Amino acid sequence: MAKTVALPLVQPVSLFGRLLAALDRVLMTSARAANRNGDLPYFGL
Image 1 (cartoon, helix red, strand yellow):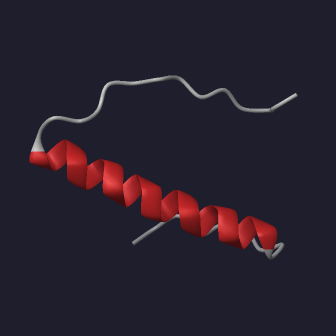
Image 2 (tube, helix red, strand yellow):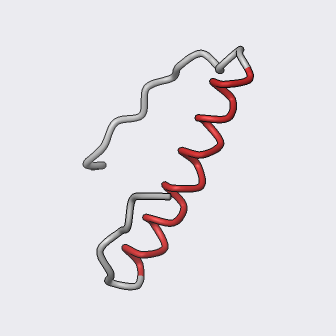
């Protein structure tokens, strides 16, 4: 059983919303890679 739940959300419509969504995807990909390597994820720019 998964520890997290994904909720279907509407896609961001504005340009700013799309930018934040893209930034979120990049940060989450980085966190997953760090987790696989046994490191603590670094959330920041």
